[in-house]
Structures are given as C-alpha cells and as structure tokens.
Length: 222
Image (cartoon, rainbow, N blue to C red; front, side, top):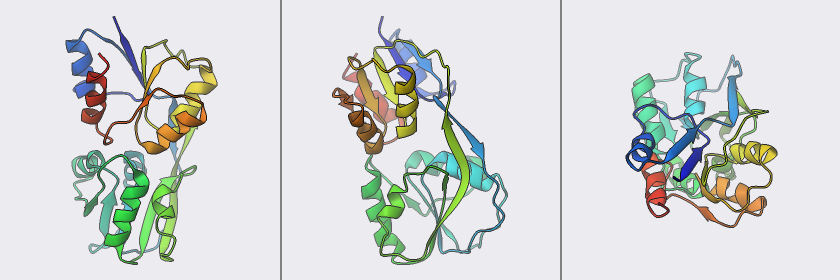
C-alpha cells in the first residue's frame, strides 16, 4: 500500500482525504510549521488590500479592522477567495490563477494601475507579489502573523511527499535530511525552488493551489 504525506491539516470533507480512502492509500496530514498572531494598531487607508494566503486573511480580519467601503480586495487564489467569502462574508475583486506567484503579481500590477495597496503578511514573507510592483511607490506591508518551524516531529516515511510552502520544506529537511529518493509534489513554484535548493530532482507541481490540482498529479503516480 502506498502512502502520502502532506504538510497541512486537512478537513474531514477534504477531496484529498476522500480520494486516498477510495484508493486505499495511507494518508498522513499535519503541518510542519505553526503560526501566531502579531498585533497591529494602525494601517494606512489604501485603494487595495492584497492577501497572499489564507493566514494573511485570517490574522488581518481577526483584528476586526475598519476598512473603507471603497477598498478593493485581492487574493492569490480561488481557494483564498472562497475562504474570504465563507469566513468573513467578503468578496474578492481580484483573484489570482495558476501556480506562478510572480506571474500573478504582474497581472495584479496591471489591475492596480499604480493605486495604493496594503499587504497583510507574515513576518518572514518572501514578498513575491510586492517584488512585481517595484515601480509602485504606494505599497505598504503590514505584519499580522509569524510562522515558525515545529521541532521534534515524528514525520512518517511516506512514498509521496506534498509540501505546501518553502518554510514547510525547510522544516521537513531539518528533521528528515536523507530523503532524496522520494516523489515530491510542491505547491507553487516558490516551494519547488526551495526543494531544488535541497537538490531534489523528482518534483511535480500542480497547475494551481487547489486540492484538485494536487489530485491531478497524484492520479499520475498511483
């Protein structure tokens, strides 16, 4: 029986959970990093607010911030847009698509058209979207949470490893440094680059950030 590990805690109705059950595959699912909020007391009024992750959405709106009715919201993916709608009853005005964050940033730049934008983010954010807006001087970063690796985890020896962020890659190889002969699925190109820096060769990258994208790749392996 094959086994799959993903660095994310999945919900009970997760399509991935249902798929592994149907195919009699052992699934291990838990994060290799943890997040904690960082308090903020002020942020500028901007034309746009852009969220690069569900965590950025969560930790920003958990502070019950007052934003102007005309402020538009941008998100990295359809999954983040759904989370924004479901958890906070807000609609995204810009929704990124695909797995290339830099490309999403360039598309957002054309929509932004030099308007001001706020980026709620992690303390150690890669700022990939911001780096595509270097000619836009009206961008502001707001740190709303921090992520850190979790130590002393018992990570299983799965056949297929799905890593969901560069920091999860770092945490994984800190604890399992000799696992080069596995098949890896990287969520996003930045995660793929982090794996390549670890000299991993056998890497698959879904076309988007959804579980459906992950399942497309898993179907080719099972």
